[in-house]
Amino acid sequence: GQQLNQSPQSMFIQEGEDVSMNCTSSSIFNTWLWYKQDPGEGPVLLIALYKAGELTSNGRLTAQFGITRKDSFLNISASIPSDVGIYFCAGWKTSYDKVIFGPGTSLSVIP
Amino acid sequence: EAGVTQFPSHSVIEKGQTVTLRCDPISGHDNLYWYRRVMGKEIKFLLHFVKESKQDESGMPNNRFLAERTGGTYSTLKVQPAELEDSGVYFCASSLQETQYFGPGTRLLVL
Image (cartoon, rainbow over all chains, first blue to last red; front, side):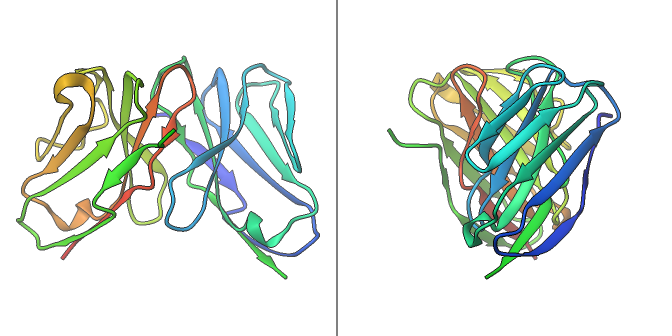
């Protein structure tokens, strides 16, 4: 079946540092999504990417939809303590379809 | 506007017992999804309702799981009888168009 791989699995960084994480897929997706899950909460959508090559920013977050449609990355600039959480990449092939999630990258920010 | 709500937030049961999880989607959202995250792995799709109809139930693990959405509003997911491997976090999501909004999840522990 479809599978997404995320790297790194976990990260420990100093407050103020930039963060980069990526996601690769064994198959093509038409939409890439990045979610963040805070402890005790459900995933919240951060960024959605709809076109190959698309680069989208949301505040300190920047994400890109890879040209091959099989990968995406998420960058966080100038990290702050509230960035702590699990970041999931996800994708779907068509709208309204089930979302396929990656295993997540756990981010810890040391003040 | 209220988000997706789930009840209970936590459930601890013994193997062989029955548990029913409830999801209240955002009002007016026809699409309702159930997902599950087991033992820190990726979040996996279980099924998708459009109103009261099951659009896709390809992710349901076995016939111990029964999902309903009578009247096309809230949904229930019943596990009977529960097994140890059913432990995990069960998320519900709803959508009007493309973006799926997730609930906080029900943390199920089967002992």
